[in-house]
Image (cartoon, rainbow, N blue to C red; front, side, top):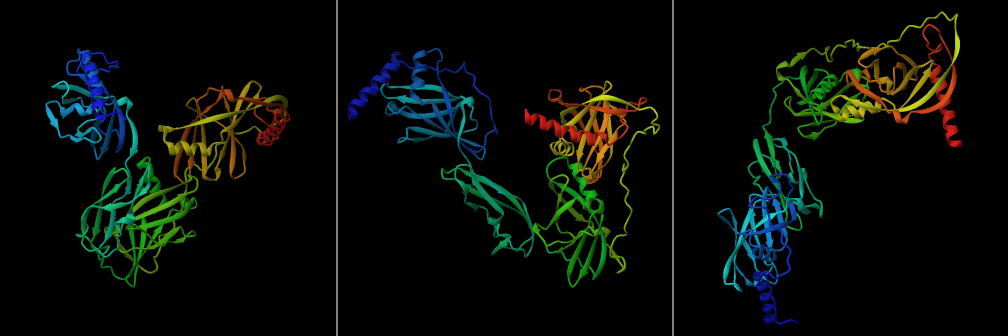
Amino acid sequence: MISKKIQQLIAGALVMGVVLGTAPIKVYAAEGNRSIGIEHKSGYKDGIYHVKNKTEYIDPSNETGNSMARNALKENTNVKIENGKYRITFSFNDMLYQFMKDIKIFSGDKELEAKINYEKKSATFESDSINEKLRVDMFITMMNRKVSFYVIQDIGTMELENEAPTIEASDISITIGDSLNLLDKVKASDKEDGEVNVEIVSDTSKFLKGNVAIKAGTYDVEYKAVDKTGLETRKKVSVTVKDIVKDNLEQGKYSIKNTVEYIGDGNAQIGNEMARKTLEEVSFLEIKDDEKLLTLKFNKDQFKFIGDVNITVDGKEVEVDLNREKAEAVIKVPSINSDIRVSVAVSIMGRTTTFKTSLLENTLTKIDDTSTSKPEEETINPGTTETKPSVDENKTEIKVVKGKLYSITNEVHYQDKNSIGQSMARQYLDKLSYIEEVEGKRYLNLTFSGIEYMSKHRFFINNQEISYKKVSDDGKKATFRFEIPNLDARIKVKMYVAPMGRDVEFDVTLNKDTLKFIKEYSVKTLPQTGGMVDSSLLFMLGSTLIGSGAYLRKKK
């Protein structure tokens, strides 16, 4: 082993080598006195990072000083970001550290409170910015003088080593007398450690006693989670404790109007419209033996597209008596002022939609026993008929011509690039379409799924509405045929979608490079129009030719 005295001699030689400018050290100097990098005030997650630093001697023109600065400080800086604060650790050269004394860190003229760890040969301090230009002062005993240099973090090299835990918790609303275990309402996980423990760091005795709500008001509750490395995350939620509200209603039956409010991502206006079309505006309340039974009535036309129905009252899921024939749900509520949230699975959309409904107390009206339900109203949906061009039934002149059948794929483009609308448009329209060429004209055939939910199809070419034919319809799928000028035509589709209660429109483009010839065929046409004699011919012919095309491809 090398003795301590020899180590000191070697270290001294290193220091002298640096002072004399003979040490073979690569210098990374900052440019002028400017900070290098981009300021990120809140762009980083809480966690532990490492970042490379650059050093600059107090006199940037002094190459010997620049070499000494680089040699004194290790190139990697550790950064701990927690609750918006930056905790930075500089590590010094292991061999030279014994000759360093009175290490100080400055931000401008302000000295930062640095904790010196002599064992780890490091200095740790808090800074307002990761990109701040800092000054390091120290006294070098071998040189018997003070040395200063700047340190700048190279933000482009910053890498996350350990991410802080994340806490999942939401605001809570309860009523006096309700049970509440706050730890059941929170979950914390860590990318490196998996699930971690959570503790409550705020005083909950003001409103909770033995996990029972005792006092009305709104209270802040703060959770804390710590991972194995000591990284800490905190999150505050609000707990609202409501007084027990006695409605003081007589026994009997009432009607009451409601409002709806969409809850979730996406367009709130469209969400509110759909919620209003789903739930009837008038609900019914029955007071019997101190129980309140609320009947929520759904629009019958919309309800056939709804699967599961789940309802929460004041944050708790309740039992739902669902009557599909009457399109209504009956639940128990403690008060007409309760927080009621309805989640419905919409089959055609393939997703669950949630909305809040609030009962309007000022619309509460007592009704006779004979008026327990809202009178049925006839609902007529707009656009339930299909536009079909007339066909001349005079078939005295019929000729046989050659036609060609091609396959081609398409893309859909929903307005405003709405992701939900885009997904639904793609679900409606089959990706594979077919093109016929007959006597120099092209006819596009688009096939739609879920046709039982749609009506009033309209097609536009280059912003002009055109005529079309429905050439097949099996109740689930339908194919529409219309003429197009070329494969670059701007195609728009409009149709009425019953579950949404409104028109939907989207653009269709044809992928020209996917055009594939299937087969040539003979077709009878009317000389006046060039149209097919039998409007169902394409459906039968297309099925045959597609099958034969698949057979030929397999044979090859």
